[in-house]
Length: 222
Length: 222
Ligand SMILES: [Mg+2]
Ligand SMILES: [Mg+2]
Ligand SMILES: [Mg+2]
Image (cartoon, each protein chain N blue to C red):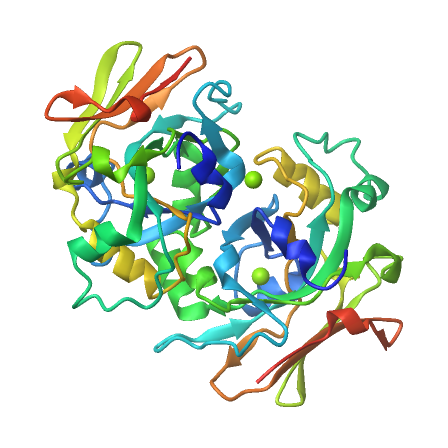
């Protein structure tokens, strides 16, 4: 599998919220006892080179850089006691670099009113995502540095080792609620440093291992 | 298009909340000024004859019978001032009868905490849906009686003419947020009478025009 072929099988996109402590603190959110998650529509996917991020009128768009998992096989009702990190790696087909763009003012309003997040998370172009990254490029998915720059200024830069809920716990929890299918995409949460972008901003994001960037994961939008 | 082929193109499933006044009243919800909506995952789809509705442990499952639209072409940034009911009919490929099953206690908790609805709406089997209903079978989509019985007792039975936001307004609003694509499924909200089901309950649902049931839309699960 290479390039963007993997998206043809993306039956659903699930995103973990609040999985990095410093990001929870910066938005004054409560720390969840269990991982919680939401869906993004496939119509929000923006491939590298396909166009620009669209900022809807009246919307405060926040970037959130995240490691994405591409599911490799059906996962259903996994036992959280026995499903290990090694099992998770076996169940993952590969990775991608993603930006969970969020209409923060729309989401804040929804949270206040107890309404769904789908609108605030689901505008067109709100899911910039990289080509497929083979598993061989990421020997340890907790030793990945995620970074995002706006207009050349570093805004997010943290290691995936800071995740609160590890990947195998995310997968076993999700699988107890909805079956994960081959091709599904899982976004694993964003580290601290989220903030707004406005039309004309140049957004660059990527991931690196021991200081060396993985080229497949490079995103740039302006 | 016949049977369940239409689901192969279902890129996303969008559901309108609170679109019938008497249902808003029965749950003590606020009446929305604009239509709001949420996503259900394709993994929650349950076809007629494919198996039973699963009631997860500790979950209070509510039925919500709804008219579903199958989108026939790309709809993007429609002008709400000029997009008419006739345009909506042109844009619809056909219909289906659906049940928007909802983990009411999970949803209530999410609403209280300002969390997403995806979990409460997205368990496996939480979207029973009928085979495709051709447009020719529904000459007027506001003259459709939706009904749902539990163990032979009538629980929901109302006309689609009671919708607060008409179908063309739903489509133009949604299209301003996310592009609607051929094959997408839109659930248009539930009338009053929602309530719980427990394992072993027999759920029958369907739709009728002038007292005559449309056979393609008949659902029965036990
Ligand atoms: Mg996020
Ligand atoms: Mg599927
Ligand atoms: Mg509903």
